[in-house]
Length: 220
Image 1 (tube, one colour):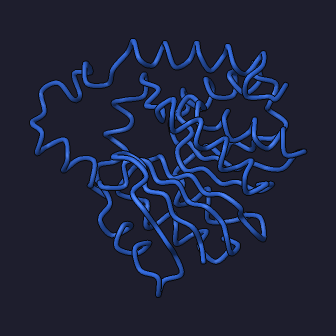
Image 2 (cartoon, rainbow, N blue to C red; image 1 turned 30 degrees about the horizontal axis):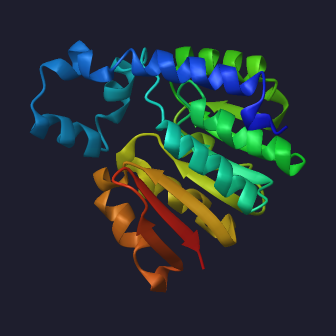
């Protein structure tokens, strides 16, 4: 048996995904009154992201089930021991990555979340999964929390926080990404600057749109 497909992780993930699917952020008053154009503008804004995500604090906003499986596979395939995540939320993606670390024999996962209520929920989920010892959850704005005390080398980076900050967060960790490090960026189309940067081989990346939602890149 492996960690991702056995208790307590597998039933917990199934429960959390079911709960997330039953509670769509599109039903939130914060989104309901917005036009499509205004939603896109907010998602791409570097000024309003804190207000936007605070208004969505009661929603899990997780990666898809398929993306979660992809994260586990990538972390196992690269034998990751050092992972950084931007955007913890309720911790569903974190659980996939931490499960991979457990099955890789251990490691360290640094993740960042600015909303205190989500930090509390995520910590509860990590404990329920028996994975707390692998996760360092840093509370606060990732532009601060991920600017210091990082591992010398990073094997995998997940970007799934405020989309407009993907380029900024990448800049914080870029010099620590080892050759062959994998970057998974969810909904990266909301950050054109990020896509432009990783699409250039001269910047040291090879990238592809893995699905409509996921940009998958490797550090050359």
